[in-house]
Structures are given as structure tokens and as C-alpha cells.
Length: 347
Image: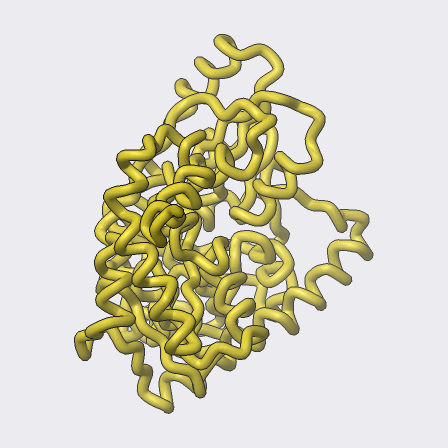
């Protein structure tokens, strides 16, 4: 009869072998994943895992895998009273904003080049410099920045939110490249901040063109955090959910993902009948988080692992998130009226 560890090894191998993991690799982490999964059941906890995490976390202990906002929403629908969000810090803040009565912990206090590029005080300074402009912040920001903004947005609804803003000028923060991409496809005057994602700004157009030559018929997908020149070259640009849907519904067999390596691993795991080619770039922030950090959050959490947001900031940041949905609905109606209901980032 197989031991529990042997059973866990086989479970992990079934999920990870097609990503290059051997049985020996799985055997090494089996005691840790087994303990994590037992503890989360005992503690009525769920583990949310961002798509940029490593496969051992995604498929070894994750209950849900996705992007930051979608996972935070999913947590509101789950009865668990404890949330372990395996991600960078600002994402866990968003989970806390949407689940204020639940305990939210982060495995490691990891930053983000985008979120770290701007503070709430800097947003207030921008408002003083541009008093007639509305402020839309990308979801990849800290709660204090969301609290100083008129509305938040995701990569999936940024166009609709910006279009529905009552001002003609919109300060889009903090991602300069996403702001430049928005400026090409919206009717607003977009003012940008100088934040960038260290992963997505690292891709260049030549790599996309090279892949097209080497793999005729390949479909190339990119995130709108990439440069406008690169976005104009790809077949689809959008966030994680949009990319997943594109690959799922496409008849093509070969795809290149211009994004972080964790998402490439996820696509290889979930679309085994598709060929994923090309390159990716590791996020140095996401990859700080290890399986042992997740265990610590359940077994012996440190004070800094608990997510706490001052009530006044939390209320205003939550308002920014709520306003996003109102504007998204208004923006969709505007685009439909203009005959642009399916406006893509690559327009």
C-alpha cells in the first residue's frame, strides 16, 4: 500500500510532468504540499495563486489560479474565512478590500515595479497639476493610490472605464505603456505617469517578427503593458482572462505569449493540445515567493504577512473599485452606440 507521501508525489507528477518535472522533483516537495493542503482544510482557508507564480504553487496547493482582481472576486464567493494570496503585496490588498471581514495573508511581502512607481502623495500632486483631469488607476497599484483615484480599471475594462470618464483629459496611472496604448484607441486625451512593468517593457518587436518567420501561422498574444509598437504587431492584446479565452476558442495550434513565464507554464499545463513557442521573462517580484512561504503563512505567520488597511483608505479605495463597474457599464454602452462594442487593444 502506498504511503500518503507517495500518493501526493503521484498527484503532483500527474499535474507537473508535462512541464518537465520528474517524479524525483515531485517527491521533494510532496511533504510540503501535503502539509499545506492539510492545514488549509483545518483552518477553513483558500489559497489564491496568481498566474505568474511557479507551477509547484499553482498546481500543488492553489485552489484558484488567475489574475489579481478576478481572484479577489472569487474569494468573495467562497465560504472560507482565511485567504492566502500567493502574489505580490498589492494584489493581497485588493483581496482585503473586497473581503474586509476575512483574514488575508500574503506568503511574502513582495513589491512590484508598477505599484512601487507611485504613491498616494504623488497622485495628490498630479491632481493639483492637472485639476481638470480625471484620474484612473490601473489595478496594479497599492490601496493608497486607489484611494486617491476617481476609478480603478483592469486590462480587460480599461477602454470602457476611460471612455466613460466625464472629463476630456484622463490621468492614467501608473503604467506609461498601457496609457500610450489607450491613447491610440480611446477618444480621451491621456496623460501618463512613468511607471512600467519590468517584465513587459523588456519585450521587443524583433522577437515577435522572428517568431512569425520561424512558425508560420503562429498566433501571438501580448499584454497591453508592452510597448505600443509591439502591441500593434500581435494578433491579440489583453489580460490573462482574454488570452485564455483567445487560445481556448482559436482553431490555431501554435501560440507565442509575450508575457511572464508563469503564464506560459499555465498555458502549457491547461492547453496540452496547443504548442506554446517563443520566450518569456521572469518577474523578479513574483518569483520571490516560494512554497515554504505559503506554508509559513498557514503554520507560523509573521505580523507583516497579515494584510491590514487603514479604514479611511480602505473606504476610498473600495469606492474606486466600485466606480470601475459603473463606468465599465457606461463605457460599453458608449462604445456600442459608436459601433465599437468589440474594440480591441490592437485596433
